[in-house]
Image (tube, one colour):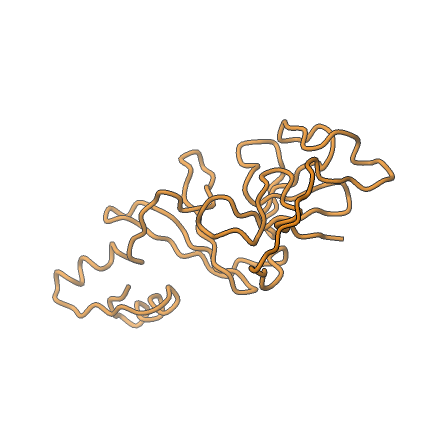
Length: 190
């Protein structure tokens, strides 16, 4: 049985939950499973925690020594009694509701944003159920799943320069999929 993190029962690894604001680097869309494991969408990169592409989370032991090197709660996750979060839970009302089941989200498109030299700045990941997540390279072959302190740029900006130089009209549309569709028929768009 999967149980989503909430404001009253946040992630035991990062203390985040889906009701927090996007883009702040604190939101966690993870969950706890009934097998003594919890899943965090923020912390795990660079550790021995296993990454799960389908849920975009890292698995952590709910109790005892975790593969990430931390102990999130004392005890043995194979005990007969269910584990409890390692901190007292304070009830907080939440007005933000999670739409869809992000644990079952599937990536359907990846849109790359590049600088004028063509170097990758960040990616926007489109999932089903419909959701968008942003990630940027960490410089070590992995990803940082936020845009904290990072400027955004126009989509397909390297392709705009030749169009501008040629005097072509530049179409400004809503959404990366629309830009790609227009580019496929020879238009210059962002």
